[in-house]
Image 1 (cartoon, rainbow, N blue to C red):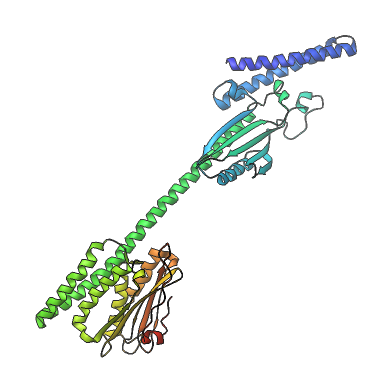
Image 2 (cartoon, rainbow, N blue to C red):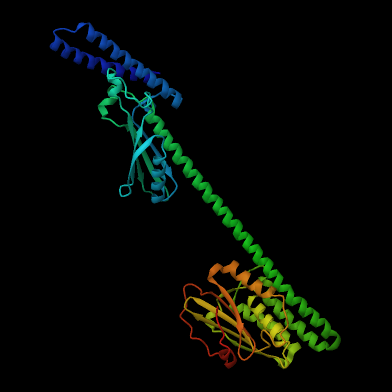
Length: 432
């Protein structure tokens, strides 16, 4: 209450001084004050008092309190925004553009300032006031809003200054009826609201990414779970048959199965392995198959030691080898050879499993395609577009399946391609 009384007294005192000065000038010009001047003086003082009371009343309704800070014509606000400088500057410019009745928005990216000119609500409905209403004709019709962005570390500060679009001496005689307080609060609320909405969107995006990652891991684990039992069931079924027909070979197969499990079970819940670990697992797998196929199965491995630390989805190499044997070598009389090759070209590592079996025709067994679909899906989930898979015919017979994955970072020195077997070279093994 004391602040509002002080403000009203200050306004009336300023008008009283102005009336006295005007009265002195009037008396000098017209040899006396006269009734006309006295009437004008009383009217001016009444309007000044009415304007001050209206200002106090409206600010009280807007702010819910009365003190020197909220009663002032010129308002300043400061807010901290948890974002980068450029992002905060664009947000401030957007808020000032959408401020009610704002126009003439000027942006200065170099100085990180945005200025807007805001029209005050028009009590005359767009019509010019009467020529006899001098106070209304010379009233302030616009306010200025100046926002400055202050760069920081992780957060930026924004200072907002709202003031009448007039000289400072006008504050002695005219009040803005809370328009600049309203502008300042509107800008502050808009910045807070938009910053909070942006943070919520980022949090929701992070939660969606976390959920997507969890779903990806779950799908990878499911796909891996579809691969591992397939081989185990087949091996145990073969061991069961050998236990009746050839117990020593059945015992040997079970011994190799134990070695295989030693390489597999410690990583059963891990979706990624290394090329070296996958090669050891695949060798144990092939030792089991050699018991059944004998000399019909030959193996050639050409993988440089420098590439054995390249990461691969678990069981993927074995899936390609198993596919080559099941659909290529087993149906072929006399069997054949499996080649496992790896090389690095620029930022890609290619791993090829080739065979000289039946190929896509000539008695090859028809498969369901689940294994190769599994390979493609696991590569997509693990590497996105950075990995690829291709399968082509080998020459003179067989199939070559190639996966390409990103090389480890930092990139190792380029590895010279190893000599490729004649069957593989003639077949033009392609790397997709």
